[in-house]
Image (tube, rainbow, N blue to C red):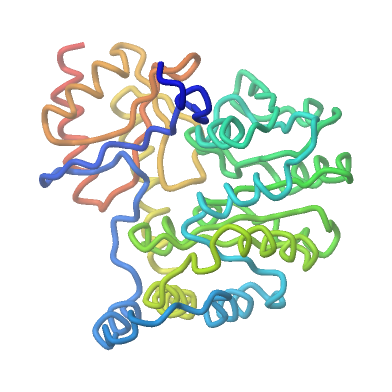
Length: 352
């Protein structure tokens, strides 16, 4: 090893889902199968490239105002970043400076431990119960912060608002982050708890329910004090985190509530229909409240099904990890994409 390598900050990086370059049925990265609001296209059509010679608004004020208006909050309760990954990473850096370990589930979004390792934050991964739910009592211990995804990924399970509040009540001295990337597909947001808990930070994204994964827009909602600390950290790191076009796109999307609700309803309807089809094919699955289903088959290993589907140019997500290595995470696509998936599964399962 070279001398300079001794001082390199080494971490095992997060591994995203495959992004194939050719045309496939892509059900592996939880993207929305429908286009974003038509208002987004209008912004793109009318955008003047001349604007790109200028720096963007470091406060992203237009976007923050649109989010605040939609969520019923004040502008000083909103923080925006380049996708919820950026928002969460900045939150880890800002709030988790204690020598005490932060707590999050053992089966969850695998970026959490990457950030903890990168920023040298001590952490404990709390095992989920046999039914893949969190145990509230496990979070009633000394800690330097808590992160709860709701609904969880990759399981899709949602915890009740009462469960979230119980964790908040018993941890008044820790920042509690509720990661709500999938909240719009079937559970209540912890947004309603913000007036009661100054230490609560709720993180959401435009990537899933608003079809803007390619634009990278995420945001956090919290007390003005929490948001102020986040901004201080952001401006010490990179003032211009969001480009001029993205700010306009995000604003247009947030202002089109009817379209947003219509597309979410379509995905939820397809998800519930897909559960029936999976059950018919002999799969068992968790009660997903997200835009994906976490499913297992008793007669054929998940790894075998994953490989067979890939041969047919249908991509789902497989995690070769303890406790979940016989599950597939299947993103909800269009009805036509899901029908092709089930036709392929019927062929594959005939070999079981």
